[in-house]
Length: 290
Ligand SMILES: C[S@@+](CC[C@H](N)C(=O)[O-])C[C@H]1O[C@@H](n2cnc3c(N)ncnc32)[C@H](O)[C@@H]1O
Image 1 (cartoon, helix red, strand yellow):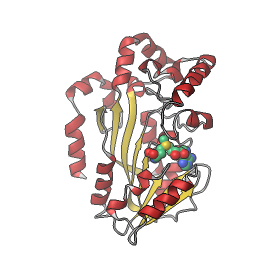
Image 2 (cartoon, helix red, strand yellow):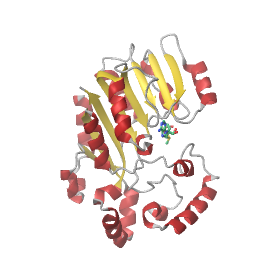
Image 3 (cartoon, rainbow, N blue to C red):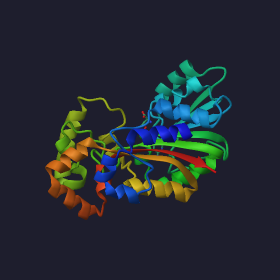
C-alpha cells in the first residue's frame, strides 16, 4: 500500500496545481492529478499485493459490459471471477467463458441490475475484490449499491473503482462530441437546444464506435449526477475506509473556461458548484471494508 501512495503523490501533487485549485485543500481527495490516472493493470497488481495474491480469491466485476475487464484478472489466477451487467452480452460472455475459463479460474457472467435488484447472486462476506471501470457514474442510487457492495465483501476486502466522465465535468453526458466547444452543452443548453444537439451527436455516433455510451445511457437515464466529493461521502456512509482517492483535472475544461469565463461563473451559480466540479473528469478510488 505504501508503494502505491508514494507513487501517486510523487507524480501528481505539484505545487502549481495546488495553487491553481486552492479549493483542493477542503476536499477529501488525497491526490489531485492533471490528465493522469492509475492504469488498470496497476490497480489489479495493487489488489494482488494487498491480499497476498489472488489465487484462492473471488473477484466481482461490476458493469462488466462485454466482459473484457473481467477476464483481464486472469493473469492473477483468482479462483472465481464474476462479471455482472444490467445488459446481457451473453454472446460475448459465452465466448469469454469458452476461451478463458481454466482449471484454476471459474469465469461467470450474469445479467443483473445492481441497483434495482438485491444482490442475491453473491453471498454476503464472500468477495475479496470488487472492481468497476466506467460504471459508478452510471449508478442512479450509489448509496444502495455501496451498501450491497460492502455486505458482499469479506472483511479486509477491497473495492477499486475508476469512474468518469463525471456529470458536472466536460462531456459529463458521455456524448463524446467531436468538438470541445460542445463539452458542457448538457449543463448549458435549454431542453430544445439540447435535443437538437443530441440529434446532431447521434449522426456523429453512427460514425464512431463507443460501445455502450452516449445516447444509449442518456435514453435510459443511467447517471448518478453526483459531484466528486459526494461520491466520497457515499462510500464513507456505507462504511468503507477510503485508502486512496484521486481526482483528475481535465485540460479540455481548462481550455474551455479560459475561453468562456462568463460560462464558468454562470454554471457555478446555476448548479451551486465548486470550480473543481466543472474541471474534474474522473476519479479512481481504493476502498476497504474494515
Ligand atoms: C461505460 S460502460 C463500461 C463497461 C465496461 N466496464 C468497460 O469498461 O468496457 C458502463 C456499464 O455499466 C452498466 N450498468 C449501468 N447501470 C447498471 C446497473 N444498474 N447494474 C448493472 N450494470 C449497469 C452498463 O450496462 C454498461 O455496460
